[in-house]
Image (cartoon, rainbow, N blue to C red; front, side, top):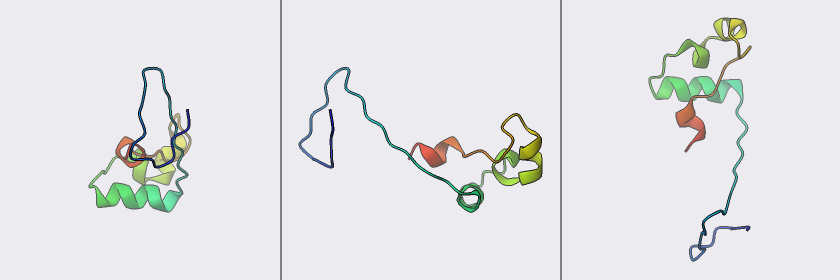
Length: 65
């Protein structure tokens, strides 16, 4: 089922939808700073590189919007 900005669209049980985002390093750091998120995995490249993620990670609040 494809829904394209139709205010009268109806959803049924079992329907699915998807959305994708692409974040760059600057937007991850900027969002974290603006929201007061001081988690180093969202701010510190060096520390994040040593983590299991190997790079900065996006805050859940940034990509669930």
